[in-house]
Image (cartoon, rainbow, N blue to C red; front, side, top):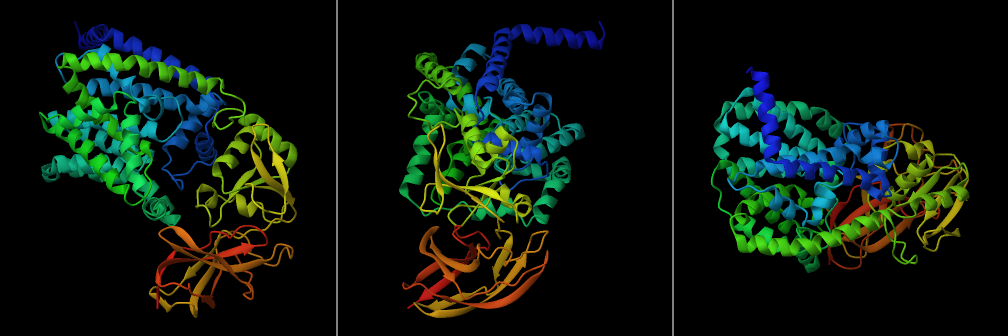
Length: 574
């Protein structure tokens, strides 16, 4: 018998040995395909679909992997299923890899299936059907652990290159992958003394250079957002929410069992040590992050690979625990089945139009009737702008202001393409001089048509003085630099009815403490593309002493104050 025949026989024998598991994978894949085909699109999925319509090496919030996967799937099947096609393929493959990471003599497909189907995050962010960055992240993280395990058994240049490629793809999926790498190296720090480790490092960086270059060219938007733009004023509820949310998404009922036995497990080798370090490291990192601000439960999705592997290897030898896992499985799977049905069919009372996947096609149609052929500008909502474009295939933009945050719409050129055009602008229900617009899914907005639209969010206002100190309730002079980052002229007098003024706002611990103050006497100079000028402005200081964050902005007409500058520290003294 030749090598080819030996290989075929080995594959067949392994398939027969785990027949129930492979049947489960097929069923899981089919269920997710059906779910992906008949479930309405989620808000963030349409945002990532917009990514895919504008392929690049990076985006404001995330690396580009999810955009590429959606682009490929949507090219094959141009609907909701196409958007989710490749994430479904990857999520099914992830289950296969995790199962083969488990190293125990009495491995049972039955108990593996019972355990994973009892975990909420398995159905959504780990091995579900959604087109979100977490799913490629989890796939490449599981592949990284699989290759790392092989590399520890036999160090070869082939495995080193494959590891480097997998690391790059993991980081192209989501930045959380860097934590997996850090804790893996920490668990086996002597690996840095081996030449093949530096081969992995070299090629990982080489493969990742396009994204690094994109970040540099675009002034590091993702770095600034994730490291500077996500802090909230501390509340004990952030930490409490972190703790109970992790118990819930790891269950809702089996969570405590999995966490207890995963943390209780004692690594038997270097590979299991890497799993344990990642497990403890992730939970500790995000627990400490909860003191900085709010943490999303799914940010720990990567840790579910070591959580499942380590807890399974502990639980499988404990019959009494397995009995409880089986008891817990039934209510869990009933809940998940009901939730999956609800994702497809809205059986809740019609007055509760709150879900992301129901009735939004009609919502888009209602707004389109109001807009006609005009582009639509949504205030502070990249999700609604994306959803409108997805369903209507017409131009929409998210105009972000000081009460929100920047996103990918601030990097695209949609805003400058709308300058001088007539648009429909849609606001939340605030006291703007616009008509009320009520959609069929009970969403209420203020909306109105604006002729000769003008906005200046890409005009950057930089405070040039680094050490800002002043007394309370006084007037100070600040040197500023005003730069036009548009590819067109920034014409501040193009529409006299939309007059623009300079504005300043004070924050403390991410909370606005002095609302925007307009400097009505300040006159902007028109700027050519890339042109800038330096000026001095006068502003009032707060009435109370303390440490503040100061930001300068442009306010146009009755629009909310724009996002034009960076937050600068200023100390106000008595």
